[in-house]
Length: 294
Ligand SMILES: Nc1ncnc2c1ncn2[C@@H]1O[C@H](COP(=O)(O)OP(=O)(O)OP(=O)(O)O)[C@@H](O)[C@H]1O
Image 1: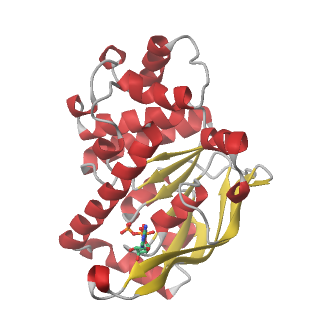
Image 2: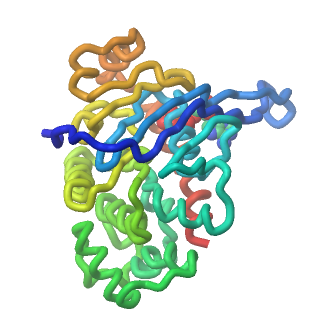
């Protein structure tokens, strides 16, 4: 059961997003450089207190779109409007403010959380980095946050490796919530977890949304997961959004051939593709986790 779709205002709007990467062709480091258009004119709208799922096969541009929206990557062109401001142009204090409003939870908690730091240090780091005071002091703040995400507050001095995958992802969620965001970008945030643990983390995200009103941009390749959490779904294919709609309507009667193919292909995801996809995600998250905590 997913929450009913509440009427709500648009919080974040991306228009005409384009991202090009310069990549080497065949021949590795000696290959000719070419331009790869990973995101090719994407429009998305995120509504307050709702979840928009971005789905599509591997390489369709979901993660790149998510990173553009969160300003972890710079756009080649296009705009991302959040509360009336084009965030692609923000810098300095205004960019810091935006980073508090839009947070990211990555796929692999172990690579995106600093293994040498305690939970307390991990969840308070974003506030310290922004030079903001920690309400009630670090210990009390961490304990309260751990309770909100269903972790034992007595474990605030433990390190990520001392937690299970699902618990570690709760630390990632706690870190995202620490700065008081309105939007949380979940980039394959439950994909690395076992199915039963996935369900628990999805329930947590839904409870947090219900009680605290977060909007989620939820990146996933697993449509069964999307069904449990999304209000609306945008389907990506080759860098473009080919179809957007309310979840139930889209699943019941997909309007685009590619969406139909995607729905039909669900049980046939090949394990070797999945392994390659996870390895790529880990490389990106290790780099971004480090950037966030330094
Ligand atoms: N930093 C980068 N440099 C070069 N190419 C990139 C970079 N990041 C992504 N790409 C390429 O852009 C395309 C879209 O990648 P993206 O990760 O956004 O897709 P995705 O739909 O999220 O798939 P996956 O789930 O496999 O990550 C792919 O061809 C990918 O190889």
